[in-house]
Image 1: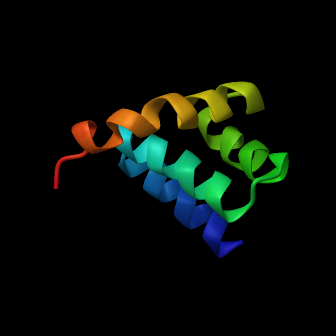
Image 2: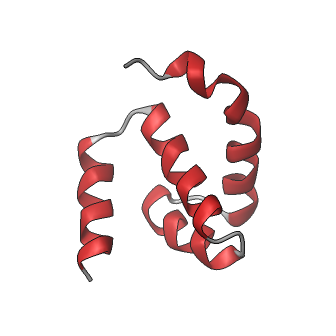
Image 3: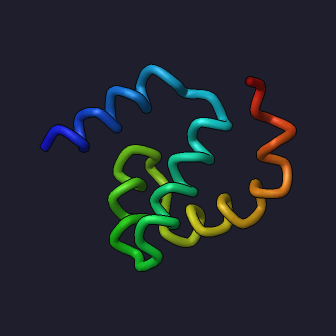
Length: 68
């Protein structure tokens, strides 16, 4: 599916911490059940628990790490 390959391509191109956090945030925002997190975990190689905790703990300094 196109969206899946687009996400995979973007992930490979942007390995920055901020980009990875934004991917988790989008996944959780779009669908709060575990399916979205499992889907994103296939790219990040992380568990549901870790994904949720990364989202919760990195939100506070998301603005500090992103440079526009």
